[in-house]
Amino acid sequence: MGQVTLIGTRLADEGQEFVYRGEAAGCEGCPYRSQCLNLDEGVKYRVTDVRENAQTLDCAVHDDGVTAVEVEAVPVRANVASKQAYAGNRTTLPGPCPHVDCPSHELCVPDGAEMGAEYRIEEVVGEPPHEFCALDRDLTTVRFAPPTDQS
Image (tube, rainbow, N blue to C red; front, top):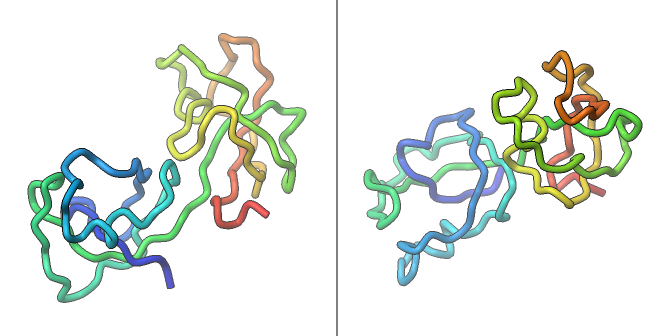
């Protein structure tokens, strides 16, 4: 069973993925804070179940309110230095990339992973989608283990 939390009703679809960004300004004083703000900031989650017959609760952040769902932390696909790309290794992202038009940009600066943080490689995926790296980096695409599986 995943972790139960409240999310905006527009996001409450099984399979929907999101990165939890923490408390918003509208959360202050909300009676549901402990049920909404119970995830780890910066972690990527997937909705695994939308609670049936769950009540839609008013929310100052989500205009259509929030509802109860189950979520689980999910792996993050990323590009890392090829010499560091082997399953079980702990590594970091190679650094920021200003080339937003590159087909690998979303893997070099992935949602759910932070520059400087160390992650365990769960699986080596293979070649990145770009033909060449404008920063002359030798990269391989991997899947980082979810934070709950980092040991």
